[in-house]
Length: 187
Image 1 (cartoon, rainbow, N blue to C red):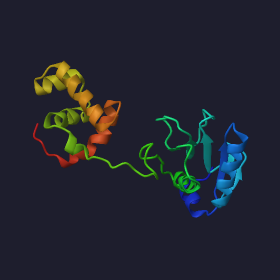
Image 2 (image 1 turned 90 degrees about the horizontal axis):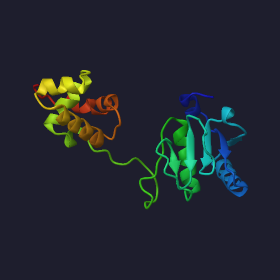
Image 3 (image 1 turned 180 degrees about the horizontal axis):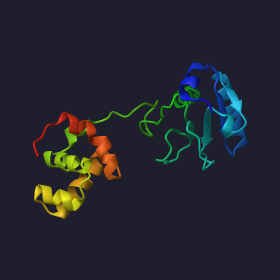
Image 4 (image 1 turned 120 degrees about the vertical axis):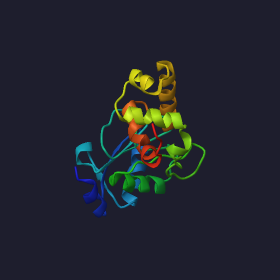
């Protein structure tokens, strides 16, 4: 497989298409060819892979899933009703390492959802707890540091996870780092 910068400089990409429906496969092949790309016969030779919802368990760094699916693990997904233009742009985007998602099922077009700055969401205590997490403290250590109960620490950590959209302590620290560098609270 080629690296992302090399793919960005090439006009024609190799695109592998997977669908259990032969007519859908033909339509997607036509879209790919009309977008100026070549059809790859297998995943290993492809710069980009397109798979509709009927195909599961494909692993490729530049994979676009098509279909009305709720696959949060897929880095790029378009609805079954995506236009040829949207599919063509998605091919170009994933080839250079971007991910593509629809804003919502009811909106037309696709793009990045507006991001809310974490420092606007976090309370001063949550920022203190986030700092303590970045220091590697346990819940017990955080409770001792701020003279609060472990239950309260757990509450603040769960609130951080929800507000930052993460599932682990390390993800919270990484996502919250901009908050830590902009806010100067004395602890």
